[in-house]
Length: 431
Image 1 (cartoon, rainbow, N blue to C red):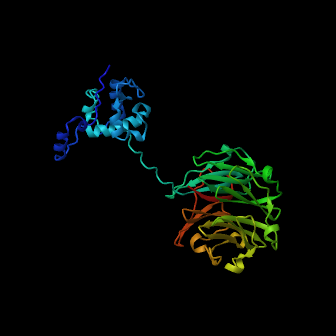
Image 2: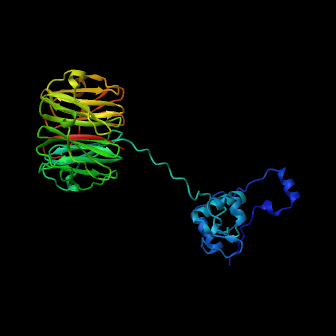
Image 3: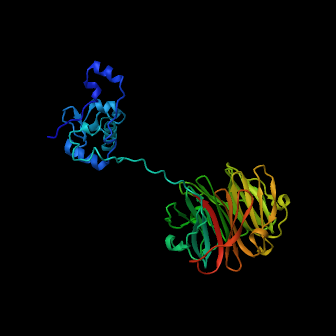
C-alpha cells in the first residue's frame, strides 16, 4: 500500500519555543512548484490511493490525494465538504493546489516521478470571458416568391443569402413578409400562396423551425396585402392589412396567439382603405402607422391593450406627398419613420420624440439617391436606424442613419443566391 505522507503544516509539529523563534524570521515558501496539471495530479492519486477519489480507509487521510482532515480544514476544504473523500475530484485538487504552493511537492511521498515538483500548469484555468454579443441585422428578401435570409454583422459584413423555404417548408408563392427579433431569435411572418399568414422562428444558433399557420390560430383574414411585425419583450405583435382594413394579433411567449382584432374599431375610422402599415415597440408601447388615402396616420396601443385615436402625421410633421409605403422603428423612447411617396420616387425620414413632438419629415434624396421604391423597411440595430428599399430596377438598397443624425449613403446589397424578381424586403435587429 502506498505511503500516506500528506502531513499537517510544519508549524503544528514543532515546539512552542521554535514557533516563537520562527515568528521573528520570514518564512520562505517552497519554490519548486506552485501548481500542477490535472494529469500530474492523476499520477499522484494513482500512487496515493490507486486513483480512488472517494476512498476512506480510516487511516487519517482521505480522498484521491490522501489529504488529512487538518490540512483539509486549514486550506479551506470545508467550503466544499466535511472531508476530502466527500468532495469532487476538482475540489480535492483545488485544496491540494494550496497545500502544494505552501509546503511544496515534499508533502507527498508519491511525488517523485510524477512531475509534481516541476509541473507549473494551472489545473483549472479560468475560462476566457465570452465575447460580448454584438447586434446583427437580419434581412429577409422575397425573391421570385421565395424567402431568402442574410445577416449583416456589427462590422458591416454580410453573410450570403440562404433559401429559407428549403429549411422551413414550402408555403407557396410568398407575398408580404416581415421579421422581428426576440431574445436573439428572429421571428418571421409571411403571407403564403393560399393567402394565409404563416410564422416561423430562426433561432439564435442559426437553425430554423417549421412554418406554422397563424390564420388557423388567430383567425382567417381575406385579401391580406401587407404584414408587419414587432416585439415587445417576449411577445410578437403582428399587423395585417386585409381587405383595406388593419388587424392586430399577439403571439405570446408560450406560442399561443390572440384572435385578430380590427384596429379601426378601437382607434377610430380612417378616411380611406388602408394600403400599408408598420409598427414598432417604443418605450414598451406598440406604435402603429397606417397609410390611408395617401396620408400617414399614427396610433399607440398601450400596455393595457387600449388604442389612442388616429393622428394625422402630415399635419404634425409636414406633407410628404401621396404615400405608397411606410416603415417605422423604435429607438429608445423615440420612434423613427421612413415614408415612400409620389409613386415611390421620393423617400422621407422623420421621428416622433418621447415628448410626443414630431420632427419635420426630410427628403432622403441627398443620402439615398434617386430611385423608385416599391417597399421600405426599417429597424434599429445597435442604436442606429437601418433601412432597406426595394427598387423597381430589381435592387435592394441599404442605408444607415447614425446616432448623431448623419447618414451612410444607400448602397446595393449583394443579392447573390436570391433568384427572381425582388418584391419585398424586411430588416430587424437581434443580438
